Amino acid sequence: MKDRYRTSSRFLATRQKRTKKVTTILQSKDYSGKAVLYMAMELSNAKWKLGFSNGSRDRSVTIAAADWKPFSHQIGLAKEKLHLPEDCPVICCYEAGRDGFWIHRMLEEIGITNLIFDSSSIEVNRRKRRAKTDKVDVKALLRLLQRYLNGERKAVSVVQVPTLDEEDQRRFNRERERLIKEHSAHIARIKSLLIQHGVRTPIDRKFPEWLEATPRDGLGNELGPNLKTELVREYERLQLVKRQIKELHQEQKRRIKEEETKAMKQIITLMQ
Image (tube, rainbow, N blue to C red):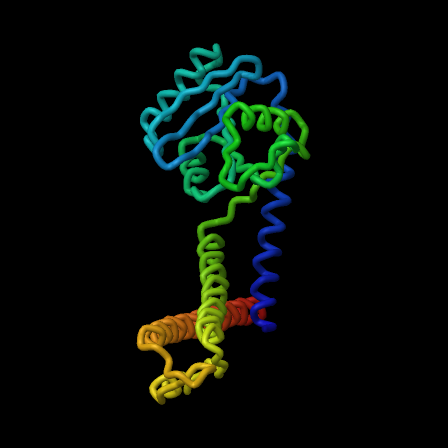
């Protein structure tokens, strides 16, 4: 447990340093009065809706998702239509969602500054409850982007983009959390199936033997064959999840030991 907290503390410390650095850079810039192409992206599986603005006039187009050639063409066209210099900076934003961070990294790769807005921080009409799957349109995102860049830092929260290593570490932790939930769900399912027939028995390693020993329901009747085979399959899935949790736990211990070994080697090197 201590090792897990130690690893979490290292991750949080690194993230806090990077967050402070990014915030400082953004707050030191004033985009008001400068030639900037503001850009917002509304993402979906098949299409991307792109919104552009020069601060007074807007323009929007739709392209095929992840088609970067027309994407770049539309940026150039937007600069032309909105009477902006060809070399003016492009500042983009999109709402955090299932697309993750790969689009952000691609935008940076082609020289576009990008911000990812936290969905929960985006203002919505209080009279209309916003579903989790509802997307904010590009016009609203453009307005938020301009407000944020012109000094209204509380207008929206910006997601801090992790490094590739940090993102991979998150996957490891999230998989473990998901497996633990699946473990609980399988046990609950088995208990539920049994309780429906007035049966209460421990879900442990002897459970398969109990199933083979002609178990009976609360009225003394033998459990039906379909119920028994369903319980067997559910128990097998439970065992698979248990094995995977154990494998992840062992991998976590190995990584912690590896980190400690590296840290000790660095200390020894510094002492020499």
